[in-house]
Image (tube, rainbow over all chains, first blue to last red; front, side, top):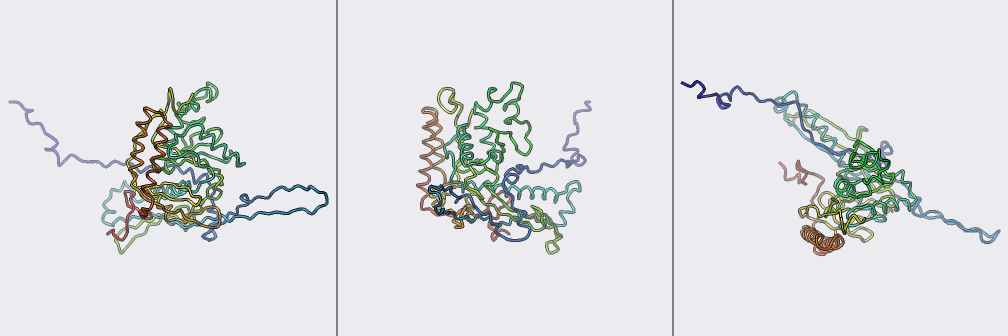
Amino acid sequence: MAVTSDPATAANLVSVISETWTSIVNEKTFNDTVLANFVTDLSAYATEGSDIFHVPDFYTNALTVGTQSTQGAEITTAIGDTVDTTLTVNTHSYVAWIIGDKDMNQIASKYSVNEIYAREAVSLLTEALEAAIAALWSSISTNAIGDTATVLSDAEIRQGLYAMENAKLKLSDCAFFFHPYVYWNQLHAVTKFYQQYSVGPSNEAGAVRTGNFGVAGYAMNYKGVLYGVPVYTTTNIVSGLQTYRNLLLHKRAFGFAVQTKGGNKVRVQMENAIRNLGTLAVVDMVYGVAVLREPAAVLLNASSAFLGS
Amino acid sequence: MDTLSGPGATVKPNQVERAQTTYFFEKPDGKIIAATDRQAWQLYARPNQIIKANRQRFKLVGTSDGTLYQKAVLESHEIFKTQGLEAAQKRLREGFDQELAVARGKIIPPPNFDTIGRGGEPVNLATLR
């Protein structure tokens, strides 16, 4: 008689086969902060109060040079109007959640649920600020390159740099901000950017090997330099009608101010909410963004209808 | 070497995104821009902080469903195969103009993105339990 005709199955042993909740938790991922780290931060001025912050504009109506054609004649004086540029702190964003006491007690002790959610909430609000800064593209009029049909190429890059230098702005104070789609699918397809003759010495690793333009590593979404100007990527670059609104910014082009109560950029608060029999958590941030110097920004439109192969 | 079109062109058609409700805004300088979702709400609801003391807001001039531009993208891909990039880009620009023409006058404000749900969609707190 066979003794192995009826082997035990998982169904037989269902009451004694355990399940394990691992300590590995997959958390939501976010962009590194690139725009807020680069543009003008007026938060220091917001610590003493105020809702509107003025940045006077002396460059729109600058002084002019006169000529003393006739010696001894009375000179002509001329002075233009200053322009009042303002930034208003008018946005109070928050993320909130509540977990009932029964559920909180029954969550496995290895999971710090409120900590995980707090980290996610802080990153969400930081991204909201980044998105608000990137959304200022709509105010750029002086230097708008390309349209909904443009496939970004070397020509548009150089047009943008020309616009900056033509405005007498230092390129050392500028940076590119591309959407990853544009960076990987259009910029890296530009032959000039990866051919060895333009990369540099033969012992220098090129873009195909490093994924960057001249500098290895991807720290803080920094992707190297193009024509000496730093390049960053962020998915917060706005897209609409399959067009990405990439930016070439001077650090004075855009500004923001954070005025969260308590002094930190983001405030995390938790309390035992008796009326709800749970723990209420609220993460909030108060901020405002503005265009401070519109001619110091270049809009580089790039269509996602095409990509470089 | 011309890397965008012609022999050895390194550009090719990409995916076609789904049509999205598109909002067209007129800037103070008269130019028309298109926006979707949260950006459209930001342009519609927030004061426009531009240089000068006059705080002009972007004017919503029309709303459309984005299908005409999506159709233009599809057709531009076909045109690209036979006529090259410039002709395809021309079709895209025509698509933008067609979408704008259909949208003009249809003033439908964008949804309020000040409060969003777990999926990132705008929600009305009054209707939530």
